[in-house]
Every structure is written in structure tokens, then in C-alpha cells.
Image (tube, rainbow, N blue to C red; front, side, top):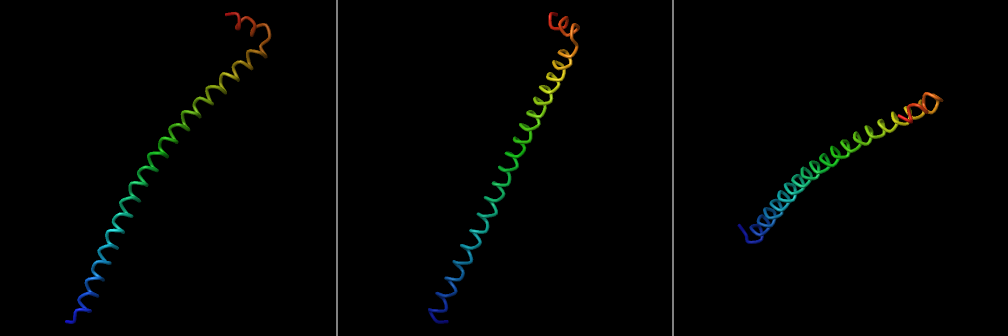
Length: 81
């Protein structure tokens, strides 16, 4: 075998190993990123549901106060209590 063929094969082997390492790193970081995004989305979903519950409670309080205002004298009695 000539020296140039050995050098060419060595270079090809080194490039193949670098490509393999690059693929492994990309898969690893993609997996970590996916996990981080999933955790963020779960947190946002929890926050969103808490906000929805707060808005629902606020809406319920608003409806109750509106019903009390429409109640007239009975609303005044309820407000005094």
C-alpha cells in the first residue's frame, strides 16, 4: 500500500469519527432540549390552569356581587351583614 492511500484512509476514518461524535452530540442536546421544553410547557400549563381557576373564581365573585346589586333592599341587608 502506498503512503497516500494510508493517509487517505486515515483521514476518512477521522472524518467518520468526527461525524459520529457530532451526531451523538446533536441527539443528546436535542433530547435535553426536548426535556427542558416539556418541563417548561408543563409549568406553563399548570400556571395557565391556576390562572383559569383564579379567573373563574373572580367571575363567580363578580356574578355574585352583580346579583347582590340587583337584589335591591335584600342586597343592602346582605352588604350590612
